[in-house]
Image (cartoon, each protein chain N blue to C red):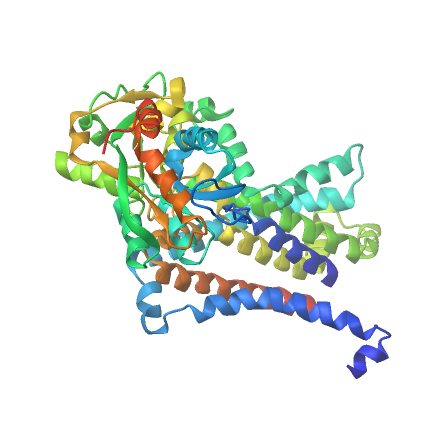
Length: 262
Length: 262
């Protein structure tokens, strides 16, 4: 309270702030209170749960790698160049952030699905994407790519171009500048963006269920497993939900740790 | 840097908030009088497969009972039972299977005993041009045919498993969906070659899908029960609605939608 006055903040602001915090924490506490601790371990290590968790970790990891491979160049282009229509491009790139995931799923279906825009081409190449693990990775990459681009572009702008200019005047080629100056400078931001992308990929539900389907060990990721378990075994759904909450807490801890280190 | 990461984290939270489910809480503001109820709102919780039939029956019931307004909450039967158990304001419950009605009965939520008012059987749905030439249940066991089923945890999946067992056919689906409408969606979009759905779903989908009937379907018949709920403020009207659905007018509408007689 004393520090609130010292900062010149009116005291009443604390009341809605606390209410807001309770609003966020209470449902998580309610979830935790429903966990059957006695059977928790057997519930989260059942065959179907393990399959789902491993599949989730595998696909989210792959999606994160794809996000880095595609997202770093995108962030560089957005932060370090200027061209006509850049603002428009930036808005479009951010679209998956605000789009309902189910809309993303439908859009992906009409792109990569059998009857989709690229479906015929894929068929010729012998690629069957629908109902495969690849479809899960595509859905996850689609929704999580903007996180990496946003956070890295911000870091690049904050870091500024001073060192890059100096390096260039000392005769370093653009690729050397990128490799030796720019990327090391923004590495913490890149790591934070990658962790956020991973988290978003791990939580992906709407686009996956719309685009990839749901089959144990192939496309049924942890969120899909939770949604299905809810029908028959609410205890298992609650236990698995808690696993995702714990992972989310770890992710936020990681990102905060990183940004404090800056 | 910090603020960018945090705003990205906030966006992450926003983006993962998928809009899911809805329940129409029916406000009941008038007292029920047994003969002429004035401005009574009746809230009916009904299985998703009943949507078009019940909308029609509801309109007929309103016409026959001036002053009564019928509102619906259509969802999966297990979701509806869970909502009723949590105290959702429902007057009538119509389930797509006896299992979920039994859950409501076991919790003393049902007034009197449920009435069976319709039956439904499974049918094969394929895209209109039937690309995989499916014309029997056996064809679904062909590994080259992409078949989508409901997951065993939901009623349509339990029915599919029952049909497989009775017919001695082993279907390897490419996806096990959450609901029968999801199965239908995958067939309509052409992603799947075939799916097992209810006869009424094929009927409702019109020429968007091609229906293939198979004799083994008679082995598994889903029975739909309806009941007035003890929590109703207008129990007499609720009971009248249940009787109306099971009566001649209700039966005619249900039969036109493809439902069988109980």
